[in-house]
Length: 173
Image 1: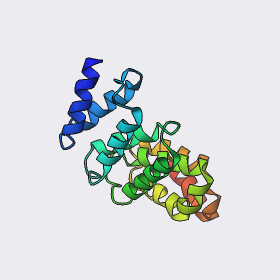
Image 2: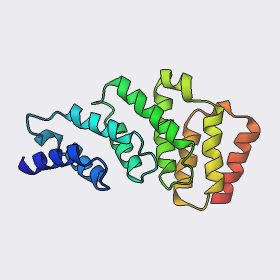
Image 3: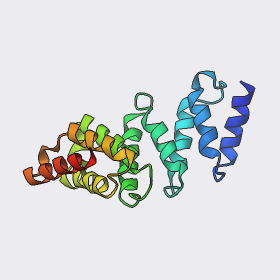
Image 4: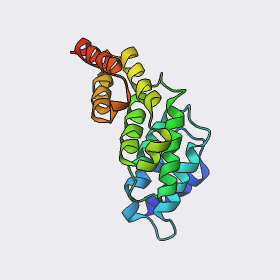
């Protein structure tokens, strides 16, 4: 109780501190014990606001992932906006170690949501994932991302590109 109140007050006043994301995540994990003066939605809003302008910070992906995992609790309009933020983050951050995680989560959400799929899910998006895998095939996350792409609807890519994926997979085994 009291520690959560201290954490809430700290999060409210320390958005530029490197530890903000970690304190915020502890609060999100303990929402059932929040004081009556704070709602879980206020914490979600704080996380969403915190993402703005901090895309280059390592903690950005942790806050984004935590919010995405709360899909059933976040209003759908905020959830779609979060997917959009993830998709926007993907393009300039393919050098980050968290890239395949964000890409994979976006791909899974796009696959599950018809409206989002119409807007964002296209051949270029799939090819961006394949390009990352080619450039990082020695990394552990590459194999998981290959599986995620294969499990998605990649019928939009050409047979030649599918063949390239098969060759890529063979080179990773």
